[in-house]
Length: 414
Image 1 (spheres, helix red, strand yellow):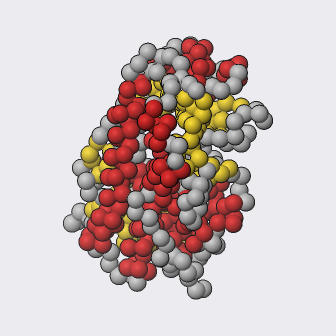
Image 2 (tube, rainbow, N blue to C red; image 1 turned 120 degrees about the vertical axis):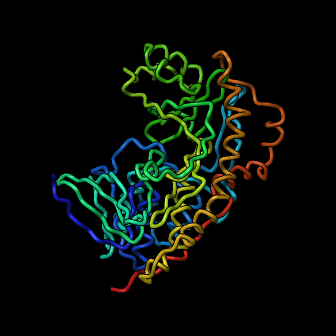
């Protein structure tokens, strides 16, 4: 049996995604000794959550990181368009919202590197890459006291006063808790792929609904990141067919020459995302808190999963940071307050997503594949007014409970 190495830390965060990295930075800025475990060697993976919402831009501004973020390759979206049979129509608008009237699209690895670089200057912060959490550690009373993990050199045991799970919707930590999970289901899965972008293409992110299918195209400046929606559970059967059959389904939804689809030489270039919508009924146990996708998996509708996770991180730092910095105990009641604050916005957004899935997406995907749909008359009427278009912009851009940074604004004294 291999001998494990012991590491003692005030707070151990499992998962180096957006929520984990932001929370680690905030806690470390507030003087808490924190260690973030990331199972991958780097952040260079094919992420799907590349949206940086106005509420996140506000957090970056408050931390003094906004200018550094804006120097990264990114684009700004002031509107979200839908391509109907008669042409493009704006249905959501960030323009005019305060303090930021746009949503940014940036590679998530650049965003995570920005947070990691800022945190690395703090002596009480550690980011351990290639370190996979495998099990929770508990004392004789069942209280979580740390995490067992593996890296390239063997087994480690992180003994912590608090463990925070930010390890995504397939959370290893959540699976070991037995916490009750409420699952809502979804009518669709998503196939992700990239297409080259030409200089004369429309300079705008948009959705293209059609009978029997729907596609969302994210403008990434030098390429299109495409999300093709399919009926739930049909991905493997579709991938068993020829890639040419898939190209034929996609072609009518493109506003440019479908010959560009020839870059998809095989199914290896198309990734399947199985959509889940769920949330924990309780987010904590003694010594453990789960946030982000580990606590609530979101639908891709509105692209708000990353926004909810980052807002969870800010709320967690605000509510738990002072106790962690004071070296006092973190009680179950304090952990429960995080869930109490974040449960309501999660429910609201999931409710909106589920309505959109049932009323719009499920009906679209049940039809026989055909061309783009005409815009409904009520939508044509409502979206004539910017004040109406700003409603979904504010809902998805800022959320329903906007978290402002209070803990971690001031750097710790050395």
